[in-house]
Image 1 (tube, rainbow, N blue to C red):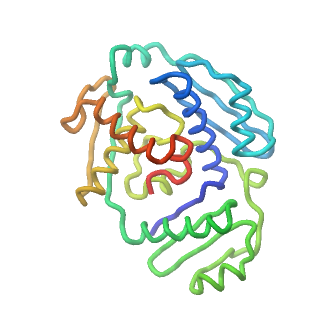
Image 2 (cartoon, helix red, strand yellow):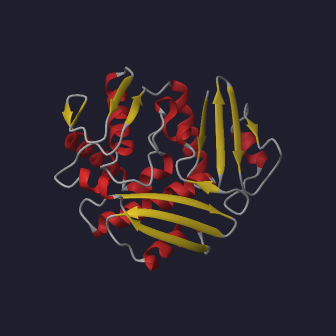
Length: 260
């Protein structure tokens, strides 16, 4: 059983905005320290960023408009906590306490990820999809249910009928769809709106990649300040995550679909 949401789901719009702000920070500083939370809905977008680099409010508003349309933006930026900043002063060290899990994707999870991308390519609007064995549920906004039913003949399509979704109907918040982004690898840490020093990003990505490569589950834990995880220097873990996210096109692109 697996649920997937697409990049236009309100929660994913929030993730994408947070990711785009992290991209902006990396454009301004080689290794910024930043954590971003976004709440969006009904014509308003509230953003709080704890950041080591000052970002122009005008640039933040421009990227919100590009992703979410012409809505009111409330942007608050504060310095990163001194203890957290000092932890990274002389090189990458684990940026948080946490537990992390990487689990190989199942055939069902891979299939729903494929279906979700296929539908979104045709209908780039708010949507959510569930696969439970043979049962496929498709909820796709701004689409003709009859068209989807003709293509996905055994699916349950838009149980309440044709509908309009998006942030005018529902609110979105960062890291609220981790099940969609991580499948069985989900733990307590959120993937989005954070720089690479944060274990929630780098260790989660590393554990997921290792699980896919080895075919066996990976479980890791760390304490803030740890210099080694899974026998590797933390800066090596960061480098692996950096390459993965860079290959996708950056943190905003990473936020579109997550790890799955």
